[in-house]
Every structure is written in C-alpha cells, then in structure tokens.
Amino acid sequence: MEIPRVDFSWIASGWELGDIWCLTFVRGLDEAEALRRMGVAEESIRPLTYRELADEGLFPHTVLAGRLEGWVVLIERNGSQATEPDTIRALSAKTELISVLRHDYATDLFVYAIDGDRLTSFDPRKPAWRYGSDPDRLLDAMEAVGIHPNHLSGVHATPETDDEWDTGPQAPTMSEALMLAARITGVLMSQEVLNAVLLSGVIAHEAEAPSGEAAGQREATSLRTSDLFAAIRQADL
Image (cartoon, rainbow, N blue to C red; front, side):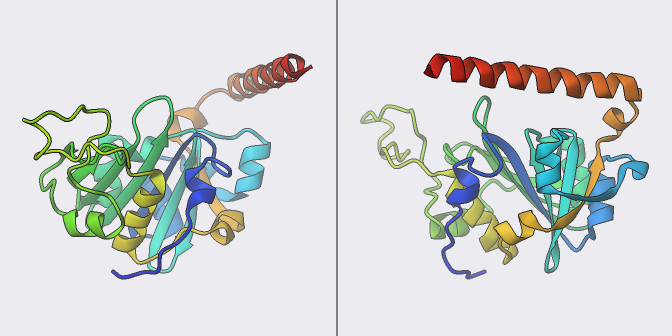
C-alpha cells in the first residue's frame, strides 16, 4: 500500500522506547483479544499509559495494546514476547502479523506471518539473510522503502560475492523496517498513539508470581537503575 514517507526516528533512535523494543501489528483483532493471544493473564488486563509503564518500571513483562484503524499495535519495551514462535502462531492465527524488534544487544528482527505461518523474517540490517516459508514475499515492498533485499552488511566483497550481495556501506536502518511495516499495514505508529490511554496486560507467568516476589524484583531493578545513574553522575564530576 502506498503511504507517504514518515520520519520514524523518534522510535528508531531509541528516544522514546529505548534500545530494546518490539512493535507488533495484528489485523482485525481488538486490544483485549490481542493481549490474550500474547499470553497475558486475564485478571491483569487494565487501562494504562506508556508514561505510567515507564515511570513505574512495569516493563518488560507488561504489554500495551492500542488501536490503529483495522489493526492493533502491541508495544513491548525491553521485551520481545511477540517474536517467540508460539506467540507468532497464536497472534497470527486466521489473520496477519508484522513484528519489528530492535535489540541493541542481540539481533534485530522483522517478521511477517499469516495464519500461523511465518512467511519471511530477517534482520533489518542484513536483509539478504531471509528465512520462512516464502522468504521473498516482500521483495517489492522492501525495495520501495529503501531496504535492498541483497544487502549484507559486514560481509567483505570479493570477485565471487560482489555480484550476489550488496555489501555497500548504506545498511538499512530500523526506520526503513518501520516504513516496511507501515507499507504492509497501511497504518502509522505515531506519538499520539503512544501517548494515549492504552490497554495493558502482564505476561501470565509473571502475573502468577507471588506479590512479594514481584515487588522485590521491581525494587531490585529500581535500586540497580539508581546505582547506575549515580555512577554515571559521579563519573561526570
């Protein structure tokens, strides 16, 4: 679908969602059903804003869900539950899914699935390595948003490989991956959506943890974060 070029740097750069985030778009579901398919505990489903999620340190186990016309977007900060094989099958059953994962300490990922079948998935920065039952399904859309399907950053060109791989310096970015998701879905993730009151849920195995244990985990995380910030400030003195 043709859509105008959009500046996704506010997401891709990490300004809003940090250096690990996952945005998953599922067609035709409402927010509650999408959260259930994600595996959240029914009793944990409640309205929540992204700011509350961030300020209260509820990530990574709390997932947010918002409406984008005929799609629902699932927002994970510091999480990637939606890219797990079982979750992909559940979320895409009898419908369509696109997931974009940024993970600065592991591997970025783009996933396209229909009715439980992962058609294609790849690292947006190395799109030449594609996997799935139909890995070339999105070639035209990839080209249209600036993702060269044969790009393989980090591979040194040789006379044997130069014709096969595009090894130039201009690697695709997460912005192009988000543009690809927008081109497929026809909907745009915006700051207005992120700042709205969304529906949320806690992944079931976390919701089942004893309240004291969960509280202790949050407190430990908060203390570690405070210690880190204190160390940074001290280093700057």
